[in-house]
Each structure stands twice: as C-alpha cells, then as structure tokens.
Length: 256
Image (cartoon, rainbow, N blue to C red; front, side, top):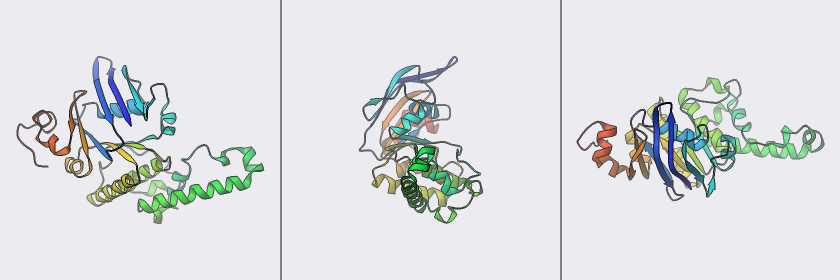
C-alpha cells in the first residue's frame, strides 16, 4: 500500500531522516510510529504527504510513485492526514466544515449552477447526507449547526478526522491524535478508528501514548535519530532492548 524506499531528509547540517524504508500493506489496519522527540516522526509524515521534499528516496502509494505530486493530488490518490494542531475553519459550522471538503463540486461552476441546477442540488444533498453520517459516527451530529470554533479541543480533533473521511481515503496518517484530549474522548476515538478499519480504512499514526499503541496497533515502527530501529508487534517492541534504551530510557522490561 505505502512504500517508502531509503527516505533521507536534511535541514541544514541536521540529518533528520536517514535511509528510512517502510512497507505498509493493506492487511494491517493500524500501524503505529513511535520514538523519542526529535526522532523524525512528523518529518517523515510531511515527506509522505508532500509538504517536504525528501533529499533521497522514493514514495509509492498503491503502486504509484508520488514524489512529483503536490499534497492535494496525493489526497486525490486516497492518502490523507490530520495535524497535531487543528486546521478547520472555526467561523463555519461543524457541518459546513465537512461539506466544503469534497472537490470539485458541481456547485462551484457558475455555468452548472445556472444550467444544471438539479445536478447541483442532487450532489449537495448527497454530500450533506454523507456529512451527517460521519457526524453521527463521531458523536458530533448534535453540534452540526454550531460554529466549529465553539468545539472543545478533543471535539476539534474528531472533526479533523471527519474532514479527512469526506475524501474517502484509503490510508490516513494521524499525527498524535490523542494529544491533549481527555480519557473519555480517547476511548471514543479508539472505537471510531476500530469501526473505520472494519469499513476498510487503514491508519498510520504517530503516538506517544504507549498503552494506546499497545491497544490499537497491529504493527509498531520505531524511529530513533532519524533511523528505523524496530519493525514488529507492540509486544515485541516492549521487550526490545534497543527500543527500550532509545525510547523509554531504561535497560529493563517496561510493562505499559
């Protein structure tokens, strides 16, 4: 599904990523990417999405090389992401934040607005129905007409996932999805992700919440100083001495 071959990225004299090779297949619902702060996790996600251009290596998704594609064109290929900080339009309603995502829409064309009004109406109705289905899944439907800026931090995180879902992605990169949200919303997010994997969506997430990684992730990758040092199960990662020394700062087994 997602294939990264020998990805390297340098900022000035700082080598942030060094020959990172990863192959995510469609049979793994949720893959976790962990590592100490500054290990290159967010930079790797930015390279995958096209926000940064790698110095060396290639990015393939579903057999297609993405290196020359802009972030929006990568999204059209079925690859989407959420950010650590919310990117929603806070002055718009929760519902409008979702319905504005699908593009191109017939209603964006002045000619179709005047000469094909029924097509525009049908498309707008279908988009709105889809948005409400997503809001129901996210437990946000009661807030559909509220300004997005009135949502709590955790609810904004959920809405960010909803905005991504409007693009019908095949793989979603989640950068610290639980950072700063309360335990109740974390559990709600877990249930939502598990439901979506049953619908065929796949997730690749950066997360510092190790118990959550153990609960959610079928596979764990570990970066340290820009290099991939582990690729295996969460259970094996907890027992790997190199991972423990790099990420957990201990020489002993950690039961998280």
